[in-house]
Length: 135
Image (cartoon, rainbow, N blue to C red; front, side):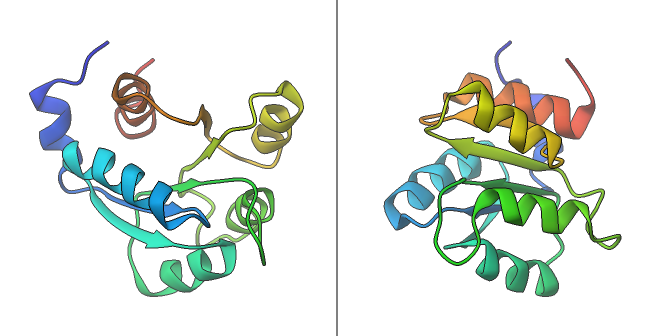
């Protein structure tokens, strides 16, 4: 399923927070999401992400797993256990492709899981599922 113009127009009003401890990866992911019409904000770890969330209305959080201070598992669990943020979709983006990581992330409340590096096609599928409730 390729991204359509309709999807890009729907997504242009959506805001995503990209959480990763590597600035170069955040830049790459930011460019990918921006090319799909999304407004992108960045954070270097889970603690920074929560600070951004307190000040910014977001439609989606994309988080790495392995980060200092607060990792992606802790961030996901914190978001999903907070009534204010519980409905906010969280997608994990990680190099860890092992089912143990995937199942743990989903068990903690992650809405989806992508393997790095993500393709634009996979991101489009996840965005359609998260925003348009399409499979």
